[in-house]
Amino acid sequence: MKSRRRPYAEQRPHDLGGGVWSVPVPIPGNPLGYTLVYAVESPQGPVLVDAGWNHPDAWDALSGGLRSLGFDVSGVRGVVITHFHPDHAGLAGQVRDASGAWIAMHENDAELVRLMSEYAARDHDDFQTDMLRRAGAAPAEAGQATGARPAPPATPDRVLRDGDLVDLPGRKLRAVHTPGHTPGHICLHLEDADRLFTGDHVLPGITPHIGIYPFDRDDVDPLGDFLASLDRIGELGSIEALPAHEWIFQDVATRAAEIRHHHEDKLEHLHALLAERAEPLTIWEAAAMMTWNRPWDDLSPMLRGMAAGEAAAHLRALEAAGRVGRLAGVDPVRFHALDS
Ligand SMILES: [Zn+2]
Image 1: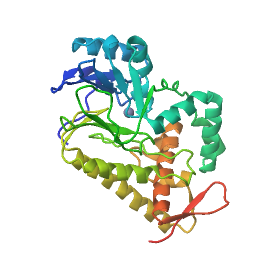
Image 2: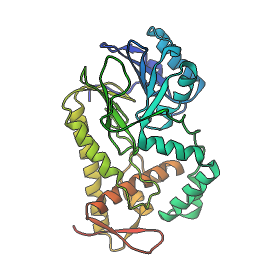
Image 3: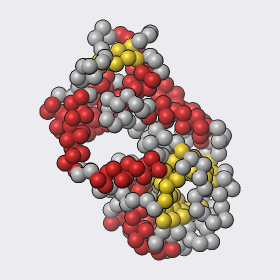
Image 4: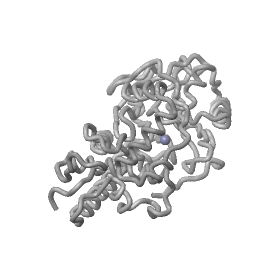
């Protein structure tokens, strides 16, 4: 890859041509650095794709960045959210307060936002601790992986489904449902210019977190969904990708195929780990044996929890493909290979 990630301090708002602008919005204290918020022009004010993290510095960057490009945040017509995570949806409510803009997201993520708003922080911690225990984490470790949770994002005014056109007068911006990173993740295809806002679904240098919550669910398959969503984006061909992090890149199809291969390798490796073992593995044991970007012993409790979520999503995808089984009636749940 020719480009590389540069720190937030080196980022600037850009006119990308064709009535599209980008504004880097910092994510304070996060190694990802920033969210790229995009503005797409319309005769009735720009529509934003994502809004950034809810923090005063982020607000200053977003409103100041828009101003430097000739817009005022009070003139924003709408905010379409690729997914409900706080680095994307966090500031949407403040934009709406300043402008009267609508907020739109996919119906599946809108439902999660509704559940989050009803959920007390203490219930969240209990849920997390119990989930980690059922995955096979030692009780002391399970208790450590909880922690600060950002406030739920603003409730959307509008929900989108696959294929819906975003309310953007004079242009064609279509929602493409790409579940995986979240159940309601969408990419947005600017069909009149053949450019794709990819959110976190397809990023140029990293891959999004794919987890399953709670870890021991067997009624959903987020990784299977994610791989199918990558294939779907691959069908759009070698068009330009405007991602929510890192940098803009050409040829979304090639990058989507690379990410698919990354997960296929991980699935094969995990299957081999299970096949080599006489004893079935807990989710926690499987996570500790998988390869992460740092050794397991160096991962913080929070990162171990995320790794376990990712391990669980891979185990579930192998199970859905008929290659792994789970032992019924044991706690914590255990998985074993079904073929070799
Ligand atoms: Zn993100």
